[in-house]
Length: 277
Length: 358
Image 1 (cartoon, rainbow over the protein chains, first blue to last red):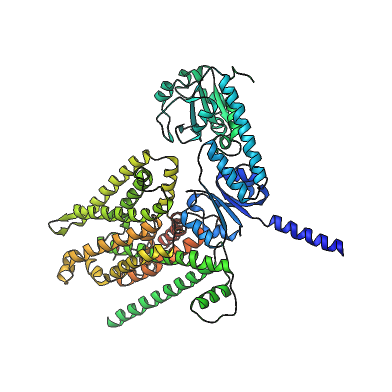
Image 2: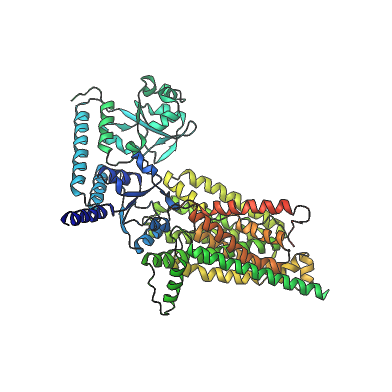
């Protein structure tokens, strides 16, 4: 009898643990939930959430204006975590009126913004401890990178390039993934560009960039590093002459999520080979 | 002769009744079907509860929210917009005696789009759009004013000493559309990724943003425009014979022209401001009616009034359910649903159809 009661209670326990049903809207938010160990609680996510890969198998709530309140409600979530200004305000208030708990996170693309995001999400998931651990690891990674940068005697000029295919290359200016540069002891090779603007050959040559920083997917689309070096104008820059093209996973580089520290450390090592710990 | 007219009258009435019944059925089905399925018994008890009638059955609370604050306002808006767009298209085609005319031609849509893209891209620099709430209030306002302003420009171009020259008016519409398109391109050049995406999705149309509040503002205007446009059935039939002929039949041609253009701008402007640009409905619904039945405006206008919502409701049902839990853009679906059907009709009736409006 006791065994029966015990197993009954453990069943209830199992049920109440798995009862948390989370929907995320925003790539970095999804990544954070997973980094906190709650990946299995996510029942659906938006189209930008591509990491970790298992998320892609879940039903997608869509992208921006194609995200609908009814679609979300039909999945019966207990918690919706959404990026501010990503999902329509009307949709959010409709979800809330259906009695679903809502966590809206304003993305700020700085280290403090990342920490704040991790704190908010870990609190909502009752995983405060895990959250603090993530933050501690982020800080440790950043400190390590900082030490490298301090020892280094160079401040490389980095040109951030974004592309999806062969034909359309853009400079990633302010308010893009180039915001990572201050953390890795580098300066942008082109200033005064806001957001993504078409890359033109003359500007590329004038930039005198020491490094190009690109997404893995973008470099692949160009046919590898060799393909990048054949972009008109690249050969005339120090980056082209020394074949210095930095390649990183796009999501890791641009998300300012839980892997931000990792990304910073990786880049700092490549940008400051002269300083060793 | 009198017998023939009577038969036509009966036929018109029958067609309208059938269309009306179909619209009602599709509306009720749409209320029940969606990403969240609301069982018919819940639907009934929710309505009975609302009317204060006694009901022992307690419907699901989530169903209640979905029905009252999401689905019903959305369907009401879909019906109003479908009616406004199709009726505007029908009235303009009759007025211009040209089957290629659609509401976009008098500049409403492009004017509205230009105003919205300006708001999306430059709004932030005037600290208008820091809060997304003010954005959702300002977008309709900008769309409406932009649409009306562009139409006013087109009217001014077509105005020649108090008389509207239709040919000049159409060319004026083309010119204003080209100008608005160029300005949009210029604004888009300054847009960042985010703003570009917002604008792209806005132009594809979205019926998901309907709330009772947005309807409270828009519904009276739409109903006014719809009633006004419906009243031009007989004058439009006269204009179909020619402007001079209509004038001699006692129709105030100038007044009719101006009123129709004004009310179309109002109807389309309000629609665009609510849901973004939804193409195809205004152009094709009146055509469908003409190809299927006859081109008497006494049928085309009221039948458009019923057929527009019918097409839009069906398209919206598909948009809501096909890729659940996500949603397709409505503008894409209207064309996907309507175009093949329209092509089928065109091919089938190729020989006997005269595609000119009445």
